[in-house]
Amino acid sequence: MDTNLISYISYILNRYNKDLRTLDKMGIDEVIKALVTINELDDYVKHINYTNLSNDNANMSYSYFKKTINVSPDFIKGVKKSSKKMLDFFKIQDDTITLNFDIVLSIMHEIMHAKQYKLLDETDNKIIKEVLMKSLTGATYNEADNKKRALKFAKKTNDINIYQLMPSELNAEIEAMKQIRNVIESIKIDDKYKYINMYDLRIKLLEMNSYTKKFIFISSPVEKFVKYRRRYMKDDIEIDKREVYKLDLDTRLSYGLPIKLSEYNNMENEIRDNIGYLYKK
Image 1 (tube, rainbow, N blue to C red):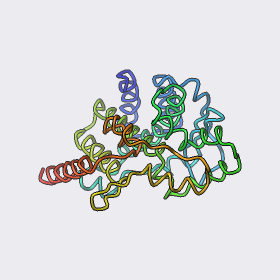
Image 2: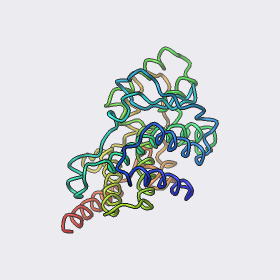
Image 3: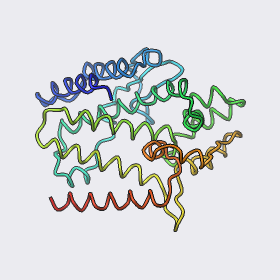
Image 4: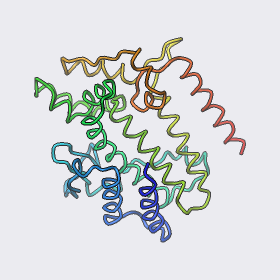
């Protein structure tokens, strides 16, 4: 992530954290505009819409067709907060500072969706283009021959079982976590290393828990997602494992693409070792 972005987001957070203030509309505005500018997304995010209507499915969302970040009036209340079990494990207070990180993480997640549409327009990588085209609802609708099927599929993606398997959602959350983790490194707070360690572990757990181990086989999120999607869309997703394995492991994990048994086992051992090390500290 651009060092200018780290510095600016850190400046905003330091200002609010110093006074123990939760990010408000002005702060959220600043964070969104900074992320849009430095990620060069001006063509993809043209407006911030503070809607008067609550959305049961999303307190914040990105609209590709309107090029808008939508923020509901209950956004702060609806932010997905850090796990209490995880906070207790790292002896981190569930306070204003933690909430501000969670708010910025939620913003970054939506910015990552805008960035995915930009990547879709610019990338030459056929695999990344394929999984984004078929999992970004706006792109699916644009490309679909049958708009009714595409709309039905888009609505069905609110189902948590499908949502968690979508390459676009997995990638947005993992990349957002990586960005907030980098921002925390430059924040002025006590016990900063605890937050960094927590996000490192959260990233690893999200990556690994997206896969299912069955004896010597590893079932990937993308492969499960393809099966769900076939119920609604006629076109398929081509996953050539020979080409997939040419991508580095971090990229494959970020999109939920196939990984090898040895890679999964290494991740499992690394998480176990890290938890053991942290538990002893």
